[in-house]
Image (cartoon, rainbow, N blue to C red):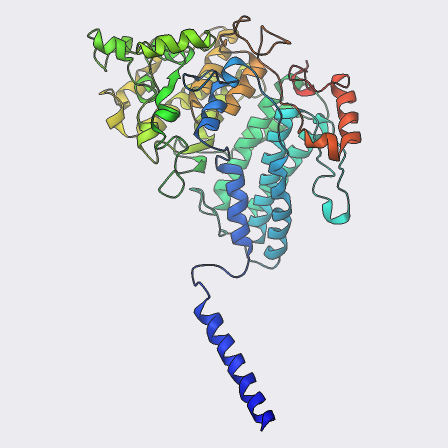
Amino acid sequence: MKKIIAAFASIFLLVGCSKFDAINTNPNTPTSVSASMLCTNIILSVTKYNGGDAKSYISENALPKYVGYANEGQLATQYNIIYNGSFGPMTILPDIDKMLGFAVGDPAENGYKGVAHFARAYTFYLLTMRMGDIPFSAANQGEIGNFKPVYDAQKDVFIGILNELEQASAFFAQSPAFEGDPTIFKGDPKKWQRATHAFTLKVLMTLSAKSNDADLRIQQRFAQLVSDNVLLESANDFLGLEYNTVNLHPLYSTNDMFTGRTILSSLVVDHLKQLNDKRLFYFAEPANAQIQAGRLPGDSEAYVGVNAAIDYAAMNTEFSKGSYSKINLRYQTKQNSEPRRLLTYAEQELILAEARVRGWITSGSAEAYYKNGVKAALISMMATDAAYAHGHAITTADIEGYFEGTAAFKNQSSEQLKQIWLQRYLLNFLIDGETAYFEYRRNGYPEFPIDPSTNLNVNSPGSLPLRYLYPSSELNYNSANLRNALDRQFDGYDEINKVMWLLKD
């Protein structure tokens, strides 16, 4: 009898558990991992804004002098101080390996391999641009017991990045469409290949100070990509993310905490005025004091930027008087004020213009590339909600007539380069402040306002810092390799004004 009861009990438990599991399994929650799922996460790690909050977003855009900030205290980056970087982005590397493992045998395996190489290249690019020498060849070796990776020389890191991009391009060229892509490319390998080449051009231009290095083959690589002509094709082409109800713009709904007290810099406002550029009306709100004095929102003179180097107390005093233009209300009132564009056709064309001026390529004209880039930037802005343009929405006529004044392409190459650099600077306003900082570090233009009396960069009061410090955790967990890297680069001293290999002639 006891055996019979035990048997019935076992059957009951088996059936009961089965029903319990069925009832408590969420059909909307995946119970297994796939290459496409990991692909989504990997692409998001590259394209999504990964800062902590709205203030972090503003801080990133204050360093390149897009904005000033009048709120709870002076913003460190506005006054030229930066601290430790992070190797946190490297945590995506194990997921890349897992994605490749799940992709074996998938018809789109080559597409996932392309994403893997692109993501590695992009991740290492940002890290070396921030800090200098970094772990590269020995990164992601924890599974084999290497928890203390050596730091590769920055030159070797860049060679590795360029090789990764070549591999990414080759795999995309051999792949059908793949799943798990959250960008507007939707897994189209041809578009990914074009974006890969656009990014390669950007990396090569970043290395302009090393253009004659035989190992890097910068000019040869650049010319070959232009000759192959597999590049982004129109103003609508970009690698990035659309903001929406799930992926909100970082400044959305922040009200007076951050967005409402963020001021446009005079560097941005004054250049837009000189160019008669209607992006002014999309970027800014008119200054309250100017409206009260009788100017209309459609009058460009109603827009006043702040000297980002001004004393913080003085800036706050003037802000309270309504003296300055705050950033456009669309940033805090729209979930999708504009996409997060990290690689664009507009920037690609401006990079091509610079390459043509430098003599790296012989096809096309620098003026045509320059115009293509600026027109694409303006077309992209046309897609922004015109209700926030203060009655000055950009039109096709504006775009065609843009080059009749100050924006007309100059005759001297030195002036042409300044025009190109300025347009790249304006292109990245409140989208990619880090690129703007990197570009200023490379070319010094447009000239940023720097006041030694307010500059928090005490070791070099006449300049911006040149790099982030290494992660403080490296002192505890990888000190020997960190010390070797510091000795090799910076005379053993981790400091924000030390000149990395990239920036040396």
